[in-house]
Image 1 (cartoon, rainbow, N blue to C red):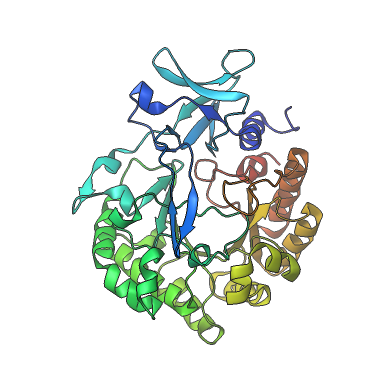
Image 2: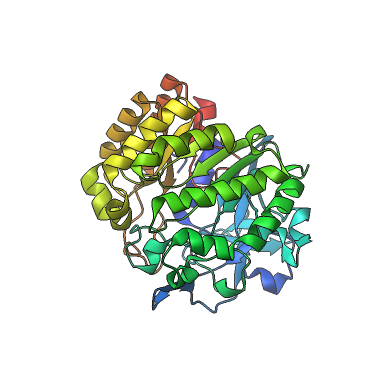
Length: 413
């Protein structure tokens, strides 16, 4: 089952397809690895969205796959039925084939926590402000949550990764948005400590020599009921980051919904010229108005597919061809239908990225089948060819992109 791929890409695809079982890292006393809860229970009660699970079973959040000198990172999606399990052998965590009981034929290592994760700012760990994803991608979430979950109009595939104890986090949560008529006023009154900490964290983390081989930086913000408020939040976040370290000097991305139409060009110019972002990402998730209405009802009502696409194309004027991106969920619509849309976007200078669809508990699509793996591989190869044809580059790199195999395939063609 090699999918006619290079070994590294083949194993990454297998683990994305099959998921991974794991022993409980708490039982092994392992504290050096990046971990996550084995399971979540996304719950909405009285407009409040949170993780109601009380299961404290911990698993690695990521694995490094190694083939000689080459490495890639894959996100761990837990599945108790997977044929592969992370276990302990001779004081090391290893990936075992359950049927044979033997190690798999590729080297793996759970991703370890960087040293700066243990440092604190005003009593909060640095990763409360900036998270390391993979080995060299830094992720910043402007606030916790997406209000479309709170009003039960989220995208059908999305679990939004809710927090269990959101009240205790320094990061502002949209759960507290309901006490305000103005989303930006909510942000102003809840963000001061967070922004101050982000400035200090930015200086320490962006200048850290523990991150490599690159430094990719992605700033993300979930949906709010007022589009311009999202961009005003981003302004505050980017200003705090830049006071710590110049984000224009790293591979920086802004990932948000577009602003209101009358302010689109003003904000695009600010993001590209003043705030320091090298690339912009506006995620359509699916291509086509009918598919968008079906899969992302909240975003369709708030923004609409046509304006989302127009915003992407207009952004090319400010960021340049190949510097404006849109992510798609592979498995959310017929792949041939998506491929046609990807080609249209490419012709206008917009790069398509993708994540492989994984069913998530308590989402409308928790029982939907994953996409056929051979079709995913075929799509990836065609997408890589589109990149070559238009002079595009895959997002991040093999050590920063965890949920697809574009980087691995692109390098080989």
